Image (tube, rainbow, N blue to C red; front, side, top):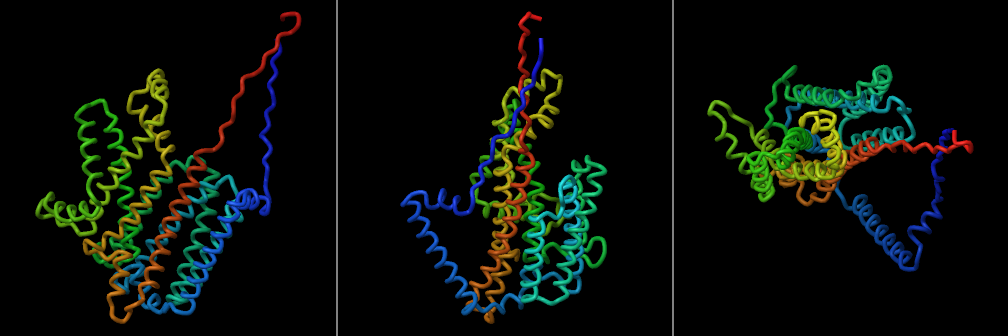
Length: 419
């Protein structure tokens, strides 16, 4: 008997030029052509109106005068260097992770060069209009640090490919180190959390709440699927109660109830109470997202793990949970983006985050009637941060959904003599 293995080739890829793509997708029929023309006219009208207002009517002097307040709030001016050190740590960790993940590819490809060029242009143009040249030099230095640590991470990643599994721990250590530097716990002067404000406070609350709510949400999702009635009932009760309450109610409750639940000698700052509220609220929604992912995993996966002798803990942590989280990456990231935008409610509980700082600036009689300029700038910052998270999630989803190699059965043919 002879065995032959067939050769499989990928199907041909049809690439359309710009005109062919436009004809196929935008002008395929008279109705689509009409919709395309109307949409283009509307887009041109909105764009020209916005540019006309920005170039002729808007008074942008409100931004240079309050740029520091929008970014760091009332952080002590003489200790701003602590914030720069904290941001440098995050840039170094980000560059190193970039290099490790791209260890088998070209680090500075066309897409990376375009992204870095756009960032450099934004830094030079925006900061030149809003702040002093020292800040421009420091911001460009952060980009250089990002690229240098990227090359270092790529070199180390090629030598030790298993280093990629330790990146989450590296990010946790980098975040804690950056937080300690910003607070002045290592060098400089200690700064209270309640003294933080602006974009710095927004990112801090969102990042800590995301890190804390993720494991809590996973545990709640597993608890809701537990075979133990007590654990399942408590998980369902928590999820349904929290999801039935508005976020602003939970924020007010955390400001009032957290000090009452702690011993009298322990005094918590308002920022920490707000983080507790955001964590409890986000964990309930995240639990339902993860539960949907758990239900998408075929039952045969856990049964096969049991047949191999794996206990329930190993089955859940190594077989079921990774597949479930992979299936709901877009939903989880969407929840994190929503949490980042919900930090604007901190202004209601007396914390001057990015939006609250903008409202405080507009309350100054000197800047009355400048709401369009301030809110447009704040909206642009929110968009850039949310787009960065969305782009990172798409890249992660693409890497985890790499095409599998199809294993085709070999074709066996018998010889004429029956051998």
